[in-house]
Length: 164
Image (cartoon, rainbow, N blue to C red):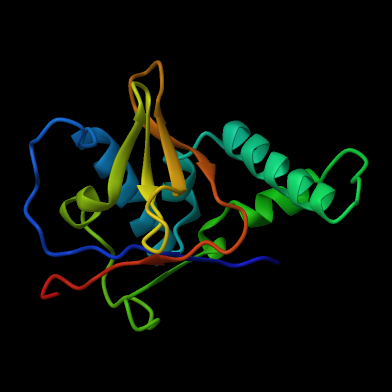
């Protein structure tokens, strides 16, 4: 199984209320999702995702990667394989040194790493390549924010401690 290491380099910055900052609800959803991953709480994890949307996103990425290697995957990866990639077990939360976190990240810690993609989408930025998204959230009709996309390969989320 592919393990996704989620690296959120979060500075101990205050919440910015400037234009372009991610909506509070999106940061809270991201924090709940990362907390569920930290605690390996499958029920809480499921409550924060749109599984069908994330499956489609991961399937597309796996198929695209295979094509770069001149492979064609008939039908793409199985639902079972996709579901193993979309689980709390697939996310590993670490600090800047690579050590596992001792506490889950708060919404306040997550806010500085979020960026607005468009009117209905925000994402957690890749620390090493801030233009790239690690986890993408969309506002649903209910109007709750949910995870709709995640980088399928080489995903690291590093969370700085509150003292950093």
